[in-house]
Length: 158
Ligand SMILES: [Zn+2]
Picture 1: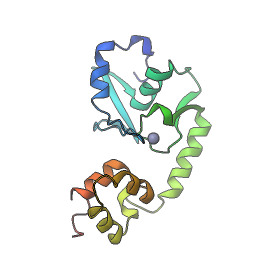
Picture 2: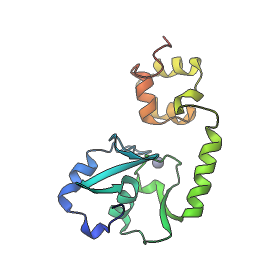
Picture 3: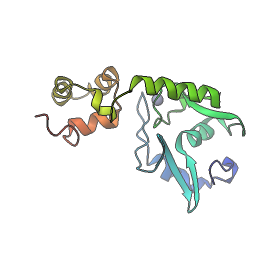
Picture 4: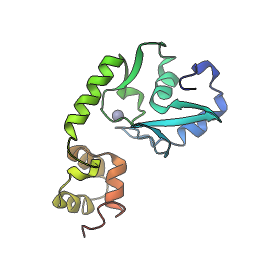
């Protein structure tokens, strides 16, 4: 069911694929709710799902070799589908990435938990246009940043 060849991807689904992505100069976070583990998932049609980042890689660079090769994130952001941040690797590379990410967020229940209340206030008061740089510096996703900025996360911090 996963990873059917790109040649079977009907071109008419591409606008729907792109509608789920916010293109930025940095990470292109997958915006849709559908996920497998940490990764975004695109439903090509009923019963056919593809990993969003792998699909993006194949749209830009052609079909990823089947078998042992995986599409990895150079940016360590599993939701990112920016082709500039994607590269081919092995499952072993991918496991090392996961271990590294796990070390970075060890002991924390959610990605936002590593922020302090002072940092949350900094996010809330950040001038327009500085959000992405600040999110990068704090090590959170643009999505998480927006949730905090809009008051959908960390509601207990005024
Ligand atoms: Zn990225």
